[in-house]
Image 1: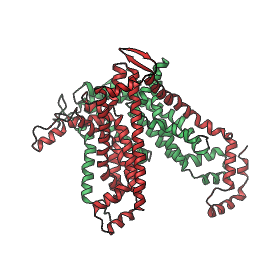
Image 2: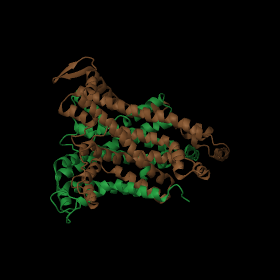
Image 3: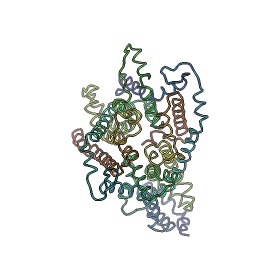
Image 4: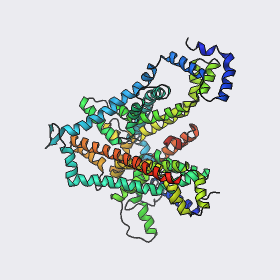
Length: 326
Length: 264
């Protein structure tokens, strides 16, 4: 068989050893082994054949459905329960011209932005503890932050419901401090915001911790030696140098909270729906599929735009900042 | 010397971590309350709500269905994902960047949109097969994670070990099972585990594709939160929390994977 040529060469093995010590590049043996492997599996086609099933699967069950949806949003509209065919932008115009829908769009962007902001505020202390704390502290924080990811999002949202309820844990705690008539947060935007920050916090902490971990400690030490206060080290060394992590975290948290459905439903009720709820209502309750498709397309656009803004613009800015730091 | 992590920072971290675990502890406290309604602090002690949940055939059925679904999805994702990762890392596939972009694109599009888009084409095709459709929907979401995780471990495989084995006379199948497999095993295990968890916990895709006979746990939980008010909801939420803790233990101790690696 084809692998025979790699078997009958024991006498050259020492030569290979020597070669490896001197030159780390793969030598003749690696090439011959690769050739043998290639012959055994049937030339270059093997690459195609291995990749093809997954690619076909995603082309048929992901790309095609999404394109069909975008197409539907542009070629059909529902007028008084009857669908009218033909190219139209009506579905998109409706989203921006109707006060009700536009308010939901604004609320979605607002909650997604505020969630990213608050998540970043909470994430920095945790990320510093993970990247700069001792092994025990780092491990404790990492596990406590990541373990809730394994708890279903419905349960996590429900947990906040039991806290923010009129007879919940927060009201009880406030009463202990003598506040007898605490505001009820459940079914307000605040409740949605609090739970979103909680649910998506890990996606902010991990990239920032990674970025801080990559900062050379001697940069911080140099700043301290040069007389920088702790705060100055934080704002002028750690913060700018960890911006790429923040950008990744912010784009993740923004995308996830803009598309959140479960958390706003459980904590916001019918009082503060987001775009996800609107899609569900239009599709399943009102049966207006073209309009639902248009909102879905807008949601994709929103997520892509946020990725572009956070990753590209912040990335460029970061390059300028570190040019000074280097 | 640990200058960066000062005492005020440690206190801040402690407070934030308390806030992170609070919504997971309060339901557990409430689930033992001996009252017909949910109240904090809990009054009395009873385990009857747990008994009620465990005896409930609907809850059990949903749980078993979710396990079955997640197992099928994991198997399909690994079956499609491992060869794809191998093809991407070991062969030069023309248009590799485009292929990679396609494979990772389901991670960018919101899950709720992926689900609704699938529902639309299934309706268009006039195809009704709920289990198959749920498997397809979940696999679209899980496949990128599997491919990413397995590719990462394949890229780390030390090629000179393969050369060494081949030189010493090992035929390719032995190289594959005794040299390559031990090196990629953690990646496959991590990808598969993550895939299972994502499928088991999925709400935004299932909400479009499920029906009454195929009703995953997250959807079931959501409906009972909407319609009942006694501590049995807290009990079922607590059971899910215990289940997650068990998963953490299994992942860290049995599989020897770190959570941090799984999430990255």
